[in-house]
Image (cartoon, rainbow, N blue to C red):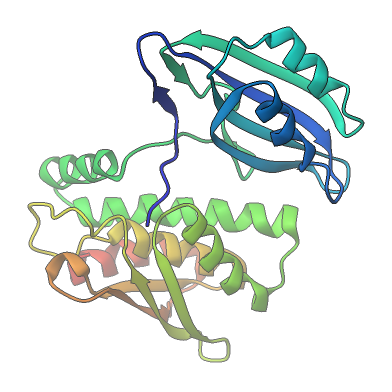
Length: 274
């Protein structure tokens, strides 16, 4: 079952709603008292999550709430602040409709992030396919740049080793909602396969008669290339949009030097109809 990102909530006409952002000490058990304070003050928690701000130092608890009784907001906030584990409390109270603004602006991998439905991304891809003469290569190149940028960030910030990056790549794309990734890769030959279950690019059938995950092909190629320091090409061989059970990709080393990698991938992508 998928989880709603929950960017807004609409209550009854007379509903009093709010979001709360509670900054607290990051230690075992620090979160347990907070829901009790909300419940004791006649507050119904609709949605909530915890996230780290700084490991072993502080975290944040974000929650949407509905006041089901005549609740004193000041009393509630003071009780939260009086908890030894709580460092700060911010909130916003409104009527009927509450919008998630506690986390604006969003950030992912030290870059500004947005939330978008996959149908929006699919519409963009379809417009490019209709308008650009070599759309498949263009989409591949966009993915290539995105994959290289992401890998560069993880190399610099996370300091991952070459043999750890596959686990990381599978995890970040899964957590971002792109699909369930499985990778079989030989580090000696630089060849392998990738399978993607429930690819967000293949879920909505576009007008093209070709495989639809060219952006993912480019992203994988860029990520592998940046991590390995060797030009890698990725080609989608099966796509769920064309009736396959899941999307599959072949990983291959590029024969030409890294300096001509962009030209090489453009030529290959155009030839293969990706």
